[in-house]
Image (cartoon, rainbow, N blue to C red; front, side, top):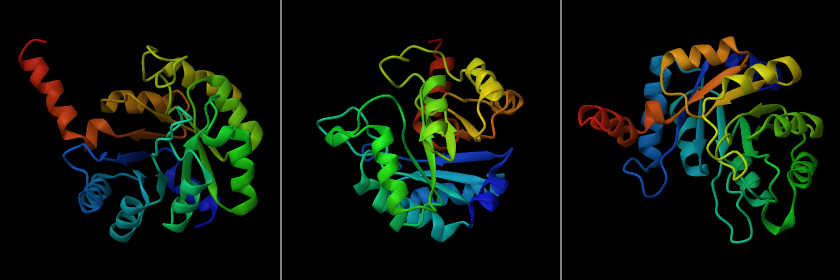
Length: 230
């Protein structure tokens, strides 16, 4: 799928994040594939998924654009979303339509900056579409400058220097609308349809919703806390 067609399929629509880490109850490529199928039936235009196994299964089950990422921890870096070329290679091999990678100001494993890693990735995979997972306005703008195809607010409140920032951050979306040229995706902390719609009204190209749809343990906790008055 070429970049223009890919973006047209996502513009103004919902992307559902189907992820479960290895310590979570729904951790399984099969289950994530079923989640993706349910998301398709519910009207999702795209899927965001973690690990080659999950992406491969999801692409087998649904004909939707997939934003693939590979969470991996390294001892020499805080960066864990597609942090090195090894993870990028794996996400290309499994057929990710878009590859998401950390594009914060932090240093990647082995001392590479985001600029370094994207340059290496572009040299190896010139036609691959890359999404920058950012935490600040400045990081989104820098992502555009160095050649990312898409920016996202994924890491807002998840970096040490944005910790405690309330998400979703609609003012950040409005600021991006006024300044950025590449598509930007609202992601992080969106819990209800009204927030998702507001993100689009603030200028977001598309909206990613994950926990509110695909992580039942967190959804259950919200209801249990409400019932118990917590």
